[in-house]
Image 1 (cartoon, one colour):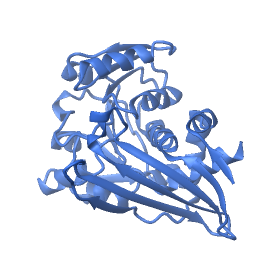
Image 2: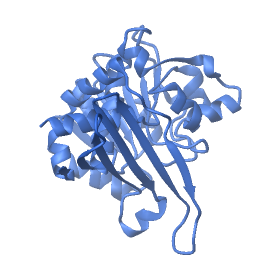
Image 3: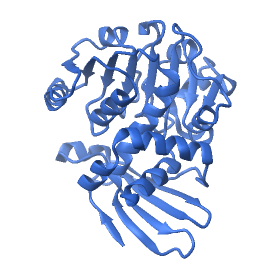
Length: 311
């Protein structure tokens, strides 16, 4: 059995081939039940947490399962909020084939899914990105979008200016300019693509800030009470999701907008299956605002794990 550590995962999952592998898997399909989501009660030592179990398989070929924990208080100990492990099994015998660093797998496949969607939804000439959030996902989202669009400038905003500045410093070797954004509204207004990856429960992107032609990439909110966008983002934008079952079960950005009566299920224009299979159109005109909401799917993990073990 292979044991694949973090650095090996990152080195084997370059974004262009990973984006292509995800596109192939969304076109071909696999069995990927909606993830099991279990709340772990708070204790005196640890705040509330979540356990996620994400299986997927291709009959007779591969079986995979990701085990994920989300401990929001980990930041107090300088630890990631999200930790994960992935096990890839033989689809004919069930024999374990690989044990893979799940955190690295998750950040890469999540960022690649956003870039896959942006390939259909962002303007082809998009040159500016505003990144909202400074956690583990942020640098991967920036690099993934840069693999799909000719980015020239990236602006980074975070609740902690120190963390935002650290991320900017970390990315100074990129072939595009990366700078600190002190004014979130101004940074959103200036962006061709806005990407969010936070655990926010209050909107960080407001619909009246969006300029015509903006693409909004909402990654972070994965529970029904979380949101990164206000209702106007949804009413102004043409909405796409990674998978309908996952989004309708967990995407707070959508569910809260539904509850407010701003939009409804019928306003979801398509998902990644439909986009990759050519069943729905992506961006239709340059001044259209598009919104992509992802909550993650085990299909993406399986595609990434297969790619990792092919090297």
